[in-house]
Length: 352
Image (tube, helix red, strand yellow):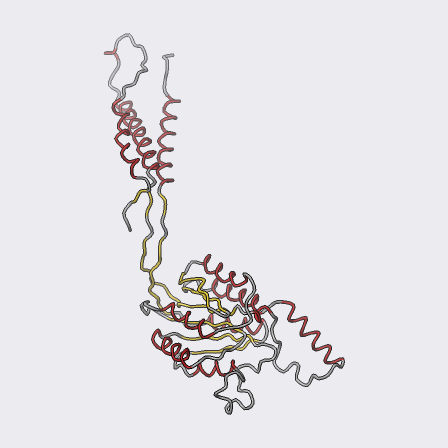
C-alpha cells in the first residue's frame, strides 16, 4: 500500500479553519426566569460536543476534498493458476476470405459441367458466410473468456507486427484487443518471422513463473531466412515457450502434410511454405502442436483442445490503478452537514 498523495496540497493550509466551530459561541438562547433552576444536562452537553465535532469534520473534509487526495497506482504480487499466452493473429488480406472447405471435397471436379458449377457455387456460398478473421476473433474471444486465470498479450501482423496488448489478466482490454483485429483492411503480404520474434519478446526480462505459450493463428506459411530462424529458435529455448499453430487452410493449399516432391525441394520453402514452417516448428525442441482447420467447426475443436492445457501455478505482478479519494471526503462532509441540518430542525426555539 502506498502513501496518500494530493493533486493540490496548497488547500491544506486552510485546515486550521476547521477549528472555528470550537471558538464560536451560540448567539441564540431561550429566556428563563432563573438559570439556577436549570439542572446540569449531561446528554445535552454530549450532543453539543457531537455537533461541534460534526461541524469540524464538515469543514476539514471539504478542505481535503479540494486538495484532491488520491492513492497512486502500485504493483502487487499475485499467485494464480494458468498460463502466459501471446496471441499472434494474422491480419493479412486473405483472412478476410472464407474457409477452404473440407479437404478433397473438390477433387475430380473439372471443366464447366453441372457438378463443377454446383461445387463452385457451394464453395462461394460458404466463403461468403463468415471470413476466417471473423471466426478467429470470435473463437479467440471465447477462449480468453473461459480462461480468467491466464495472462494474455497480443500481436497483430501482416507485413509488420503490431503489439496491441501487453500482458494483462483484465478481461476488458483483452476483449478490446481481440476486437481490434477487425479495424481496417489488411495487406496482401505476411511476415510470420517478425511476428513470432515480436511475440517472443513479450517474455524478455520476465521471471519464469509458469506455462508460456505463443499461439499463432494464420492462414498461410512464410519463408523464413536463416537469420530469423536462428533468432526464433534461440528465443524459444531461452524463454521455454510452447508454440501452438492453428492453421486456417486456404483453398489452394496442400496443408501441413508433405506435398509431392517436398524432400527434393527442401531448400525451396516457396513450394509449400506451410509445410516447411510446420517442419521448422517441429525442429525447435520445444512443446509444439499444430491444428489444421478448414472450416469454423474444425477451428473451434482446435481452440477447445488448447483450452484443455495444463494450468500451472503462476506468479505475476498486477498494477492496481490510481484511485481518487475525494469522493470519500465529500461523502464525509455531506454526512456531517446532514447531521447538523437534522439537529437544527429538531432544535426547540421557544417554550410551549
